[in-house]
Length: 215
Image 1: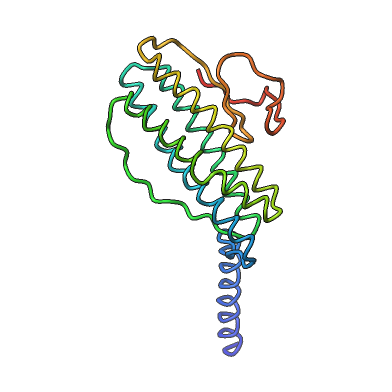
Image 2: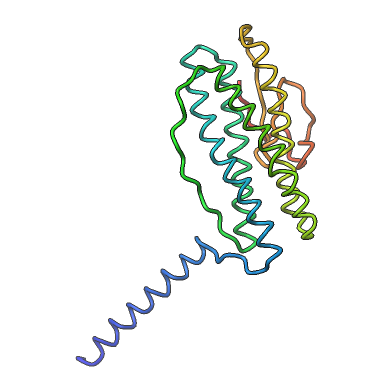
C-alpha cells in the first residue's frame, strides 16, 4: 500500500500536466512554420488587430455621441463597432485554423474629443487601412494561393469602403441629425444603410433575415 500511494500521486500529477498542456495547445496553437503561410498570417493578424482596436474605439465614440444627443451618429458608430468586431473574429479564427496565433493588442483609452472630431478620426483610420496594408495583404494571400485569407481581407475592405462613404455623408450632414438605420451582416461584417437591401449579403450570401439592425 505504501508503494502504491506515491505511484498513484505521481501518475495523477503527470496526467494533470498532460491535460493542461493539451488544453493550452488548443487555446494557443503553434506559430506557423511554412514561410509563405507565415507571411500571409502575419499580415492577416495586422488587419485583425486594427479591427479589434477600431471596434472598441467606435463603441466609445458611440457613447460620446449619445451624450452629445447625436443619436444618428451613435447608431452609426455602434454598427461600425459590431462590423469590425465580426471581422476581427473572422481574422482570429482564420489565423488559428491555419496554425497561427492571434495576438490581442493592448488598448489605449481614447481621447475625449467632440463627436465631429471622432467622425474625422474614424474616417482617417478607414482611409489609412484601405490605402495601407489591405491591398498588399490581399495580393500576398493570392500569391500564396490562400484564397480563404484573401476573401476575408476583401470582406474587410468592402466594409471599410462603405463606412468611408457613410462617414463622409455624416460629416457633411451632421447638423441635420436625421434618424437613420444600418444593418450589418453577422458573417462578414458588411454594413448597409437604409431599409433597402438584397435578400442575401452580396459578399458572403448570408440571408438578410439574419442581419443585425441598428436604429
